[in-house]
Amino acid sequence: MPYRIEYIENEGGLIVSWTGKIAADEVIQSYRDRFAPLERLKKLRYIITDYTEMEVFELKPEDIKIIAAISNHAAKNNRDLFAVAIMPKDFAFGLARMFQSYADDDTTGWHTLVTRTRKEAEEWLYGALSPDLKFRNP
Image 1 (cartoon, rainbow, N blue to C red):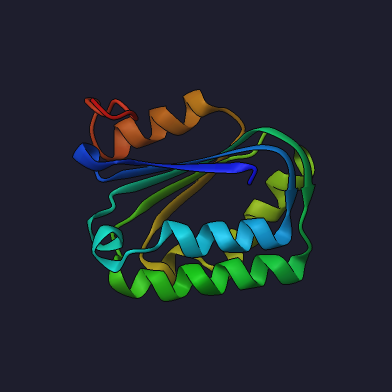
Image 2: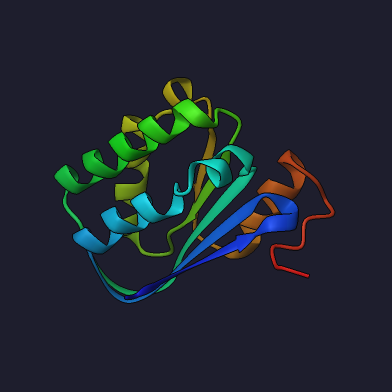
């Protein structure tokens, strides 16, 4: 599986890191995985989805609608989430912006950002949540 999910329990964080070739079914499954179990979803404060190590991104607009629907459903259980996607490649960046239009902040209650670097993502979360975030388990 080309993704790894790490829960940062003490911060209410979740980091999804991707590597290599990424297929649509894997992305869809990762969205199901990240929002389970329900009790953990309710406690999440932030999600970082990092595609920095991605080589190939094989998603289509139809796949983006599916993951947006999963997110819209999850938002019913947590409307205060900060979610940032790190998308250094142009095609993936565009699909992430498309995702934002299907799972927009007004629908989800979430605060979302698409950026190109981990540094930008962390700075945004520092400003939005706390400058004391570590983005790792103690």
